[in-house]
Length: 625
Image 1 (tube, rainbow, N blue to C red):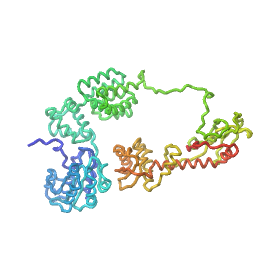
Image 2 (image 1 turned 90 degrees about the vertical axis):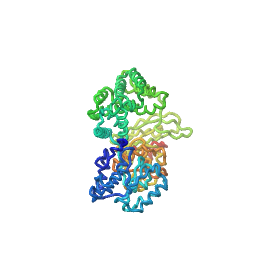
Image 3 (image 1 turned 90 degrees about the horizontal axis):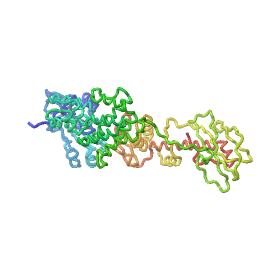
């Protein structure tokens, strides 16, 4: 009998054998127990996490006849009836698996749908499983929409994909979607230990830990690597052999490099990299292992006692390094290691690139070995030697007008800084001769009832002055507005057309920003997008810039929305945007700006200054705070 690889030999046969997907198992188990069955299921997730396995178990649960032949729909298929055994062996006539990667055309899909009109031959339900469904053409998707929406009562669809973003929204809305998550290294490690114990294969725990990390969340990859390790080690799995097989760097070198960087020892860094070169160890693997160690060090520095698994043999050395390297250097080195992996392919020699990445940290450290902040200090210049700079650029004065001089009155003491805003009023002299400075201050009360001491010159010789007047302005309740130029705000507000979904999206984005759930590009995507439609837990967004519509950015926004309980799935299309949170914010800002201008221009004191002293408000000087 030919050898059966571990990934196929230990494929789960029922839900109780599934590992690492408890959220999917619980939902399907409850649905089968309560007979609340959907007609179409969509399983998403990376490779090797159990999408096809769940599909087969679901087909067995729907068609299981029981060991005595009297069974019904169940969450625990017996595995011994003809239906269960035929599905496991791949010869059940009512269970059809279609590989959309090689059968992606409309003809193949139509051929599959032609079988839908016939009732099951042997089982209780027909089950059509389409793997890698995102590979189907648009015509093929359209051909299956009607049947997918209203299939016969005896027909169930099961779709699986590694890239749900490429599946049309019309298909997503017709399916019950489950996302199978990548498995944690600890989960993979535990399962590998059980499999090897069943196979009577001796294995060292550090070797299994290396295999679990190398699998990167895929159980199938972990079992395949285990098969390879058994062959490489002649029936035994040893740490040294697994490191050689994977090209992994011994953690001793990693700890030596981090220790040398903490001690500002450039010689040891260069010598260790030369040892890696002589042994043929991967530079990329070195940076990857350093990133993993630095991440645990950062956690230990931020939250002592939460460094990870206590059974990890490297935990003691990691804790020692965490106490020796300052937290800011740990963060900097972690960032350098992450970005340095992208530089390895650009350099003529990857080991030279590795050396430069590590020495970069030493270049940023001060000679004394202690962290300090460097700031540039401007030389002090006497105030009399500095030219007067107005608060805002004034308009060009007519010929014969005198020079401008700046003078700012203090804000009233009874007004909080955050509740005030200032304007600059500029007066000009009709005589080029310098005028005397004012010698008295008269109290003035604005239309809002706020008192201010404003220097007033003699009526005969009005001097040039710029006066700051506080004006009370209440911010929009709950609004978090970004500063922008008035012209930009007016332009954005002019293109703003409110929609019903826009209010929902604006509130959702404000919630995510306030909780700091989205930042950087994800925050920009949310601000610049428009909510077009909501279909249950699936939201359709639209953006104008293609640069914002990146797969990683979309996934991070989807995760933030799902964590907030707003939407489990999103799609982003390109098109004209008329109602986005950014444009709503600009419209709110423009309205605040207009209210502030109205308050200022209608103020009696401002009107008196304009009428009696030829003053004018400096353009752009009215700023709501």
